[in-house]
Every structure is written in structure tokens, then in C-alpha cells.
Length: 563
Image (cartoon, rainbow, N blue to C red):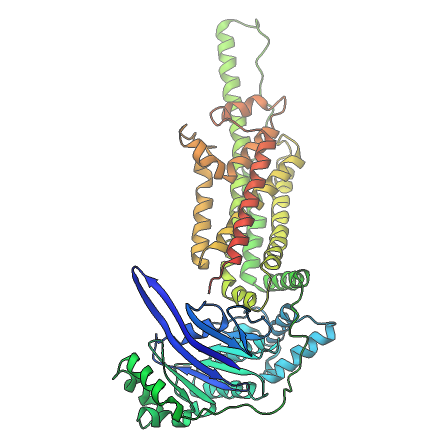
């Protein structure tokens, strides 16, 4: 039994409190199929989210089987929520999407049990002939069936559907409504469907009419036209506009008892499945998410081509500038050799040579660093924001944010290692005279790529849309070069403010500091004396701090609700 007792949901706009839901009281029996209808903006979706626990009621109580949900939340296995938007990855097939949902939401004992639950759900929603078809090519109605299937894997007793028939043709709409009606026919499951459409009302056990947040009617669809004194259901909305919401609500409180509410219950529970009360552990969810992420990656040809283009093209761009190699720097002859004019001429030649060699080394290192930060931005700018709605839906179903972030970390770490190692090794092979310890350089290159990847992952977790996240990440990369101070020295008062946030500076500085050998120390000093190179160990510590900050922001962003 689902009971709403004087539910109110309010928001503050300045000094005014607006009641989006006001004094809503209803009772819904087990095995019941209920429609929530009303004009646009009347609070249908808001009420559904209040029932689901996505919006916290401002006043009143919600009871589920006698439990006050203000004191004890519904477990993820008890409730299914089907949003209006698509909640599946285009690159996966129907079968893969449902199996992934089973493994994320139901603790099973064997692979065979996973297949059993998956096949049962596929049959339940009538998608057997579509099981090998990718989500991207499904029609609107087929995607709505898939959305229902993803929620049925945990065998919920309360299924909440938000506008799942919107935008469908009449035939597809009727098919989806009939499917939801069948899903409520097991005698235990309540199915609630928010819809703007007044078609197919005869398939519902009851209809809840909302008008500006107030209950105007809750009873059998057969008595709807009689109550509102209209000839057809389509005339209800114009009729509502003739009186105030308070009048309609007061009228329902006065006369509602005369309208018998029908129960759609009856029959035994014939649903099957795993243990609905047990959510898989964090490690199990992590493995499912990681495997799914790699599968999606290898099926996205556009991303594969982009990554390959950067992986192969960027090191070549760096190597082109060093194809002539790094020449041995000139040295000043011993003091006293030659006359003063010759010594001045030699000193000028040595200084010019040192500036040229130092500039070449500094430029090659900075070019590597900037291109790796661009790779890092591409790695993670849309990683969370681009699938935010799917993630929120899976989090509602019991997904642990820590498992989600861990899967992203493992996936991105692989990209970072491949990109950074290949960049460093390729450039070392192409420019073998590049000074310094190759192991140290590779380590720093890995760190700067990881730092930018982590920071952009944090941005992706915090931003509301993938477009915002991508734009912010591009700006961040764009500012790396000018604010690093490697090309033009920054004013003394700006440098301490900006430098701590510029990953490129720390990677460039740490690399150059490690390359200051006995032979190349003077040329490097010539081009960096204005930028005050920092010791390698400090640069490493700063890059590790950037990585930590980025991952922390990503986790905080993942924990926040973004419906």
C-alpha cells in the first residue's frame, strides 16, 4: 500500500514560498496501475520525484506498507524509476544493456542466474527479437520498453514512470500503456505513470488529476467525465481552467468519497529473479562498469580515430622540431687565451649557442607537455558529464559512486600510461641527444597527463552539461602555455597567484631541472633564469597534488544529485 498524507513540496523564490505540491493525499492498493495527469506545469513529475525520494517533501508523510518513508527510505530494489530520457548507452545491445543492469543491481550466485534474470526481463517486455540490436537504432517505443526492462531486473514492487509515452505515435503509446498494465497485474506491484496524454485511460485502475499542485480527482477512469461534467476526457483540461485549484481541491475533499476507487490487484506474485534486497558489492560493480566502459570505447569509432590521431600525430609533431638533434654546447676557452676582442667575440658566440640549444630543449619539453595536457582534456572532459543522466539513474538503483569513480580512474589511467609513455619514448628515439634521465622524464610526462586528466574529470563531475565541461576544459588547456611563464616571463605579482594551478609549468620545470647535466646546465640556465626553475621533487609533489584535487572534485561531483 502506498499512502500520501497531506504531502506538500515547496520552493523559495526570494521571500515568496511557492507550493508546487499542496496537500496531496491519496491511497494506492498493491497490484494497482495509476495515471497521474494534468496540464503542463501542474506538478506531475514533481510529485513522482517526491514519491521516489528524489525530492524531499516539505510537509506531510509518505507511507509504504506502513513504513514512514521520512524515517526509512525505500531500498533500491523496492522501487524502479523510469525517466523520460533514454537511460542506456547507444553502443550497447539490448541484451548487453539489460545484463549490465542485472549485474549492477542484483546480487546473483552464478553467471547462469544472471542470464536467467536477463532472459526473463527480455521476455517480460517483449524484446526477444531485438535482443542483439544496438540501442542507437531502436525506435522511441522500443527505447521506452528497454527503460522499463532496466528497472524490472530488481523486480521492484513500486514502479514509477515519468512521461514514458511522450512523443510516441498512438499505436506505440497504447502498446507501452498495455505493457505497464501487464506489469501491475502480478498482484503486488504498483505502477504509477505520469502522462500528459488522456488516451488509453481505460487501461488504468485509477486516474489522479493534478491542477497546480492540488488533487482535483483520484478515482476510476470510467467516472472521470461524470465528475468533471464533460463529454470526453479531452475536455477535462479546459474544464479545469474555469475554476481555481483551491476550488477543485475543496470540491474533491467534499465529494470524492462518492467515487469508488477500483483496485487492480488480485493474483499471486509470479515474478522471478535474484535476491532483490541484495545490491552487488563495490568490487563487483567496479568490474562491471570497467568492462562496460572498454566495450563502449572500442565501439565508438569516432573516439578511437581521435585517440589514434593524437597518439600517433602528436609525438611526430614534437619530433619534427628536434630532427637535427641537440648539438653539444660550446664552451668558453681557458682564461687568458687570445686577446680581449677575441674573448668578447667567443663569449658572444657561446652565449648565442647556449640560448639556441637551451631554447630548443625548453621548447621540445614544453611542446610535449602542452600536447599531453590536451590529451588529458580529451580523455576526461565529457567522461562523467556525458553520461550523467545514466549514472544518476544507476545511482538511484544502488550503484556506489566510489565504484563508478574507481572504474573511471582505471580506464583513464590506461589511456594516460599509453599516451605518455609513447610520447616520451618516441621523442627519445627521434631525438636521442635529448639530455637527462629518460625514466625521470617519462615519470613527469605521465604525471602531467594524469594531472590534467584528473582535473578535467573533476570538472566533468561538477559541471551540469557535457558542453559546459568541454568548454571549461578547453579554456583550462588554453591558459596552460601563457600562464606557465615558459615563453614569456610573468609579472612578479601574478606569478605566485597563477603558477600553483598550472600543471604545464610544473611538468616543464621538473623536466628541465632533471636535464641540467654538466654539459647542458648552462644552456638551460640561459633560457630559464627569468622563470626560476623549481626542483624536480617539488614539481612532482605539485603534480600529485593536482591529481588528488581533480579526483576529489570528481568524487564530490559524483556524489551530488544531478537530476
